[in-house]
Image (tube, rainbow, N blue to C red; front, side, top):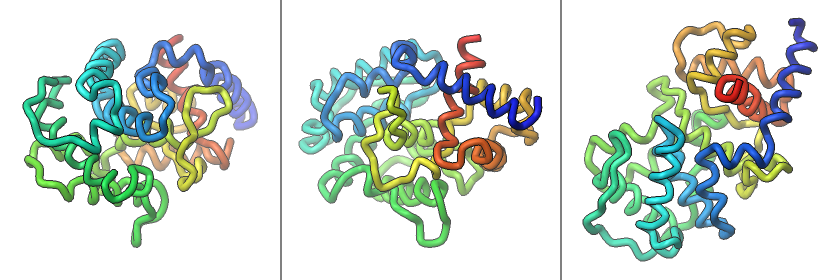
Length: 247
């Protein structure tokens, strides 16, 4: 395909899958159970953190997180004290969850989760924001093992789950899928969550040459997608993921 043809194809596929019907098959359905901004972002962040493996299992464990937080994530976090927890999702366990709860409590005592994704003094764009967030989040006492659940772009991680969470919070897609409740980050900065579906089809379409699914590959892909839509390049996540997951 020529570039204009590829853009037309991707625009069509993005519109096809960026629909409310997408919610029923995706972990984003968990934060959609809430209306309060703080509830949405807290449960959204936790669900995004465990978003690897089968989507049905992610959704099931997302519902368990809601029960643990007594169906009121914000109130639960504000009043959280370390306690015995029963939770396991692959390698994310109760020790990790206790640390995440405690760190979120500190964040909300000082402000909110959005403000922690602030501009970095040395590293521009979404990469710097993720690094700023990671540095703040790890400021609470924790076991070393828990750090692996917070991807680090400085180590060339594609940070799939954090980028997915940011897409959920920042994009206002007018279709009711992504929430668009964070206004301090322009959607032009967003990077899509690079996974096996998006990377494979990006390579098939000539949008990605790098073989590893890492941050450098993500930068290459987003540079190409930004040529098609510099204002909202992350919308093409729906196209690339949808082609792989549903076709």
